[in-house]
Length: 303
Image (tube, rainbow, N blue to C red; front, side):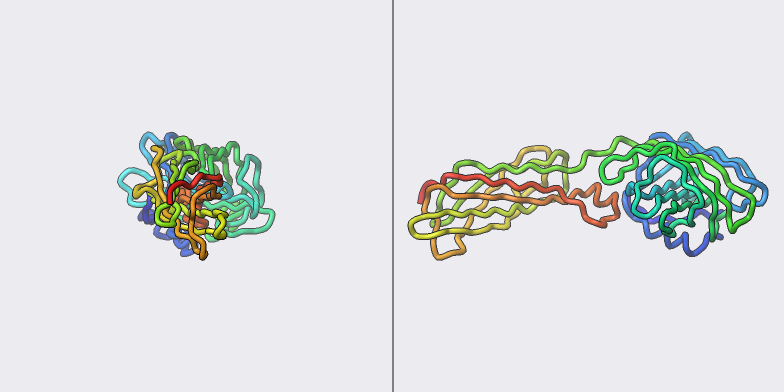
């Protein structure tokens, strides 16, 4: 789900820092199958406004994303244009966000060596500086940091005041799609047409993709007239890579003085297919590809 996000009217007092942090996220957010947020706010806590809060997926929408190190959870109430709550949990730099207690936290999105970071905004607004801690009770991931389930408790103090916001958030998301894989084959029999090698094979992905992949094919043949070798960078069969096995064909012109004569030749074929779902989920940085490389010896016939 690609979307531009903004905070509800009750959060107009949020700092510029959080606004820029939130608006920069534009990748796929997961809508939870089940989730809850329970929070208790001390008198004097500006985020929770000194009240108790209980939100579930029955009336609210929970959306989340993760890269395995950072988890963001946004809670949308009915008829409110932006998230009513935004929760950020970060592992220390270079670590995965795993079950355990993270004390003396930094203020997300700040990165401090050896420290996790936290930020919870709510109906009363946001904090400029945060102290506190959080405990990850459960964190399970699919490919590339896909957030399968998450459960964490937290205690947050704004601007160093004693008043605290305490709570627990739980999220369960749909099962993750498998990481994209692609399979190439090369037919053992090929042909010669006007001195060019005509080779073929098949391509298949383990799940449907909207990408029409390029297949790079190289043929090398040793003959009495010399070494003939050439490469063709051609698109696949004119359609996207899907779970249906599809044929491809490449016509290779020798880049040397020798032409393909017929006999046995070495053939390699390679491809890279963009994994659109996980590239989008990871904010397209870096792009995620599935690849395959096949090499074999084929018999070239004809002339």
